[in-house]
Length: 222
Length: 249
Image 1: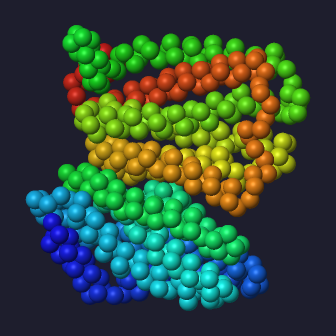
Image 2: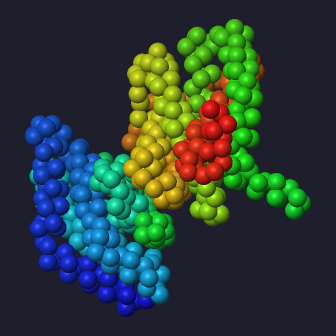
Image 3: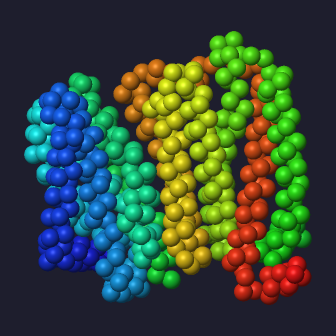
């Protein structure tokens, strides 16, 4: 089981490395969306500092959304997914491995970019550290919950738009606690409570999401 | 006992449920009209004017039942979704998709009437209050469910995918509700609260309860009508639908 887990992660990472343009495009989408906000609301540092956590987190949600449709689509099209579903190991393990790989490809780059973009918004060092930490803790939940939506919209008309319609409402708690942690640091309340809740969401999300995802995949493969 | 069980499962098939639903619908419409008329006449004619809110409070006779129904229908929908997944019955999926538009409608009515009430009372159409926000998110969840079912052509797959989504949603509703609540209290003290209102006069409560019953009856009637249409549409290739339609012509 662990062997399959590692094999799937390794395979997904290798596939992503062969098509780096996809990964880079999602990262630049994140950078561009974040950079648009100062242009839209004006360059006053006070205002930007207040907006930064929300803007960065919403942009992270959207950038994650962007790469989700491809989570299962390629494997579905060429029949790999069917073979994985036939394997003696539970399909949930495969899903979990794919979620981990998706996070490494789509989530981790966002975490590493965030402090640089935060500087554009004139965030203090403490706030930058908490922002990065909150993204590090929170983005795995985005990949986990997103996998459910990706599996449900597999091979469905207008999958991309539908996916955001299904998944974005479920992302709301992650957004609230993620942006809230940075907000709490800025206002001097301390981010521990938010970060703990965010950690709970991630653990719960990543632990439970493979079940409905596997069920949805089996429905799609019927 | 076994006799009763068989009776229940008898109506799990569209063929037997279709005429039963047809017989029940007029009754539920009638009850909805009776409850609605008495509830509204109590609400508008008998209930006293509120000391603080004046006449404007009377919108609660529509607003509160609509909010209750919007939440309750999501639970009922998830119940049918779970039944459909567990027992693989055709009717459960049909019931779930028949309920979704009614639930979305009530969520929308609740938001709309809430805005109409908020303007004179709070001086604003919308506040980012925890309840308002979570009702809005509930509307999004309904829309997602309807959109997912509409996008999948195969009805069996649409039912199952919708069922998984509804169950994921129902697990998430408490999480979303509490996160929104904490978000609100952490951001700012709630400047306005719905819970602060003085304890209600008995006539008001009765009016509201009757209106809630009317909304129940309306929901059941409409859901059954929609389920009947879905049944005919999905089972159009079967013999019982053909004979039924032939008999009608």
